[in-house]
Length: 556
Image (tube, rainbow, N blue to C red):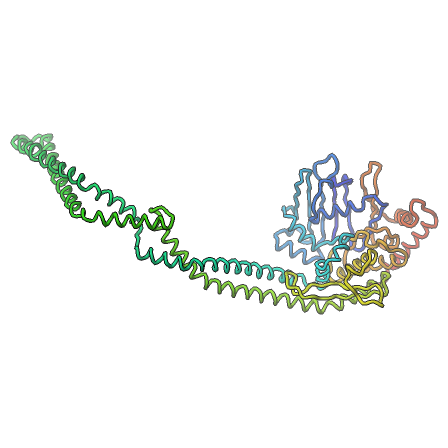
């Protein structure tokens, strides 16, 4: 239930705090006093769109905070727990806060944790429902009718399972369609890919072969000049060895001295001799290999030409041809695997569809069983509020979607002589108000919604009918907290608590809780307008006394 509502800098509200009791709370006040502002403020904290016009003039932001008692709201507690938003100190308490700024930004918190508006709407939707004239117009749509009917069916988890399984099925179905299209397009390339793979496999290009062939071609193309340089180097080394290093080493051997420096010089010259001999040997081997490989220049050039040709054919650089060949192999392998994967995906889609149908059929059974009790309860409630010849039926039509295997259309007739017809085609404005109220009362009684906010649900009714509306709301309030904005004194008198909305001399909206003589005076005003008389006060007292007797009598 809604326990407290705190509003700051919202429209004409500077600062106020409202305490709400359980049972039936009535809110009254003169036209234009600001009763709708309170509901707009509550709507903001429930996740409705924020507007700059809602922010009090000359201020930068408005703030609305609502505290809920979740003692009798297990579904809301479960949502909080699954979202990690449950108050660890008091699991029966939930504090929702919303701030809207003049720059258009809006922020929301649940139990001090920042949340998105989607989370806010989902959570608060399980705790409180606001019913106003806009909701009445929404009732003309089959989507709202099904939603209200499902509230009566009271299988929220099954409804959620149907929605979740439908979306999973659709997600897989969309993926299957995309994969099919991709495979169709790919199959058109199969022949080309197969030809390319065979051509590249036959060519047997190796990793880094192009780079190695390029180096080899460059070397082979310069063989003659390289051999001349190598030959000259060999001659120079041999000549230097014969004429210089060797003779010098022989001369030093003739010196009869054991000087360390002399020994070191001899050893170094020995190393030079060895190095020269080894260099000559390596150069001769290089020259011989180069000379014997000279005949393969044409073969290397031909291989390189083939690589260049294939690279141009595949529109890549010659250095990237090996990578391109691997990519073509992978694409063909993926194409071959795609058909088997498509079969597995098709099987997943079928399983997802079966899971959806299983949940949807279970929900359909609950809906079918609930249709007659729902219609009977609505007709009974309509009889109470003055539509004693009304007929009401729930018609089903096949419609596979995230809401299940059917949609509903409420059929109604205000005259027993006529068969029920679609609500949107039959009901007048006044009848729609009563029908929507009757449906809402029936739904709330069955779904155990913690809190129901009614904005002038009794509009267009008066006298005995208004009294019946009030008594009906009073009975509903035994199970569900009801907050009702009303202009009917009969309804106001039946409230367990009474709040009056008024404007101050500064044109600010203020509220006060009424009791005793203050409440008599307010109901008298509702009866007689500004000209309150002794008779209107007496009538107000009678209404309150009768309401007191009614409230103390056993209720079912």
